[in-house]
Image 1 (cartoon, rainbow, N blue to C red):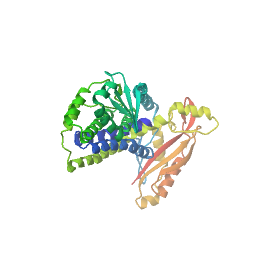
Image 2: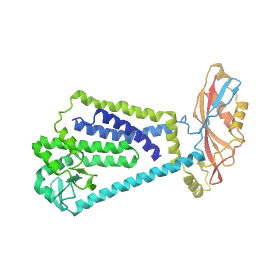
Image 3: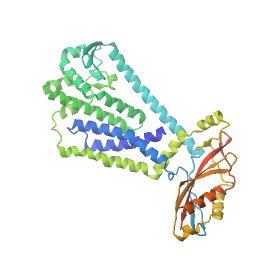
Length: 425
């Protein structure tokens, strides 16, 4: 399920990023831009849960490899789509894909944790100076560590403190006041979830650039001479990059930052460009709702949630209990195959006279259990049309002969089967 969630989240984030990149990036509206990016992050985190739950609980989303249709019968046309759980070959493709995703996510998380450990080591080895709301950390490696802030700590070398201490403190304290480090944590958490998504990495750079634009503006507005501040930025343009996880003084291209300091604030009408986020996210939702896309997402979610290994473990741990599987290695099968099932349905279906008289038609979705001995039990209507048509669907299923049961690790097991049946005049 985590991969399906990640794919939907990536789609929404990519749509949001494209809208931001073309309509808002580079505009002198830094606070609005920051909150727009954070809104895109929030949408990409929360909305996929809603979309995925809707897909998983929609019985019409078909994860089967194909469609089976019957011929004409008395009283109307009867059609049937079989909504299988994934067959063995499809699972064989998806399981390695899920494994690759999880390995990539863990590797990315480890990479970021190593960066955080490096930050904490820098902070831990420096001299601490308490300044009320924040802590100044002075380190000795004058040629390696560019000034940066993380949490309540502001880090700089002693040389930087002696040369530009006031301006650097003003700059990094602005990061501290704005709590930019929390934004960075959110950005890197999203990257761990979407390590394969270029938009996630580029959005992080957009966010950190906005942080620097916002802080540069705050420093200049505080009364610091613009030219002196820009000169300081140029002199501090170098520095070791392992603190890139934090808000570093030398982050982002200085040329863009210097130019941004001379840009006029964007007028109100241009700030309305944030509304472009609405249709962009709408596109992402629409794409995820396309039946073929929804079917793939549902298939991935069901495969990751119902692996054969988990099924075998449950079967071994509770051999005396009746366990009904959703995904299995070998699907249950009607005697002599699906063609025989279609012939059996054509022979036995009876279109309800009252429904035919009043022109009632539609799709009944019926779910039932094929027991380990092949018996069909527990039929239930997932989606009905009318009492008469629903009763006919229940009668059909209840009168079915024994099936060949599903198998997990060579053992016959009970499994669910869902059969959508369209009654159409």
